[in-house]
Each structure stands twice: as C-alpha cells, then as structure tokens.
Image (cartoon, rainbow, N blue to C red):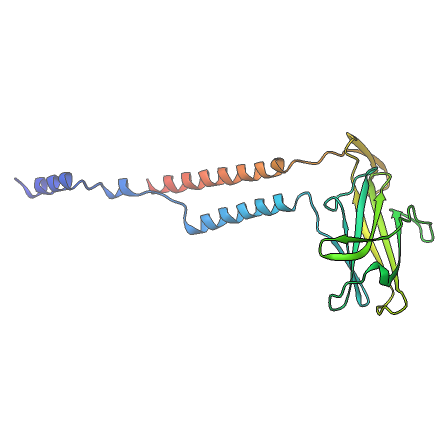
Length: 226
C-alpha cells in the first residue's frame, strides 16, 4: 500500500475534517460590543420616553425643583398636582411655613407687565422625601407652553435670600381629545394629534435594525471564509 493510501485511511478513521469545513464564523468582539451598545441605546430611549426629568432652578442660596403629577406631563383641562422642593445651600429643606411664597402661571408668549393667567393657592404638601413643601393644584386651560413663576421671601426667623424661579411647562391635549389646536414657533395655529406614540413603536424599528445588521455581518464573514 502506498504512503498516500495510508494517509488517506488514517484520515478517514480518525474522523478528521478538512480545515475549510471546520471553520465556523462568529462575530468578533468589536461587532458584539457594537450590538450591545445599540441594545443599551434602545433601553435608554424606552426608559426615558415619555417621562421627563424634574425641572431644577437655582437663585442665590436657594434651589428649587418642580414636579407635576403625573410624570411631569400635564394635560389641558385636567387637574395636575404641582409641588416645589425648596432647599437651602447644604440641602436643608425650606417648608412653606418658612416661606412667603407666591405662584403665578403665564401662557407663553406673554408681554412684560401682563397679569398672570392663573394664581393658584399654595398649600403645604408631602411629596417623595419632602415634608411641608409648597404645592398647588393647577388646571391648564389649553395645550401649549406655560411659564410657572414662583417668588419667595423668608418669613420672620427664616434665613435665606429672596428668590424668583421661572419654570417652563409644556401641556399636552386632554385624554378625551383626539386632536388639539396649538401655536407653532411662528405663532400660527396648527392642528396636531394629541395621542402619544407607544413605546413599542419606537423600540421595534431599532430592534429590527439590530437584527438586520447582525445577519448582514454574519453573512459577510461567512462569505469571506469560503
């Protein structure tokens, strides 16, 4: 038996497979990291939408945080609970009992000296980890942009500087409305849908893009190895 035949038999009985048939193509570490980055981006978007962060202002030695229930997303024609967490430098909370505070609501745009649209009565409320902070129930009449102005001076015995905070709030259409009339950036009346875009409608196209990219990369690497 020739040496070539012996090598052929030993290869057959050892169950060895040619190198070109043993190769399997997997995405490299760079591709995996990129796919993980896209996945984390999708998670970030779905977590942040539609809720928005609390609004924070600072004046002198006082900081103010505004939150409006529900989820900082007030709707026109529906009562919304607003509260203001006031803190002195160092983190000490300023309760309403120590502040001569006044709240005014303006519809944007408004002229200097124009009277406020609303002046809600402030009351001491408990919210999150804060006790006795200023709060008020506000019903915004129409969708659009509003400015909430909170002015405050210390009562006798309290120690902080007078402050004035201005918070911009965007109000959506009421839940019973299918459409809403609002003003665009040029002041012209425009009609738009008040319904929110579902979270799955945002995430689905991104997941589809990731899947297509993954399949394309596997196909490209598989073709290059043949």
